[in-house]
Image (cartoon, rainbow, N blue to C red; front, side, top):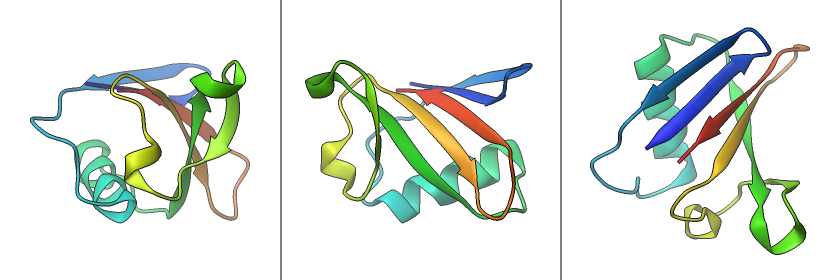
Length: 83
């Protein structure tokens, strides 16, 4: 399950049947679900470091239930997702 906060005023939740094979696959799923055209990067709130934001570089780093932040490349907008 992913809770996606597009920005401070927009939150969306989706369910995933399984963990994506890669970070790029997860990004493509989110782009399709939310109809995003812009590229973005993902950060997650790392439970090992009291929720400090960490760039998601390997899908295996993502906890079973996680909060993701979508950072639009070349823009000011960030968003959040919860798995």
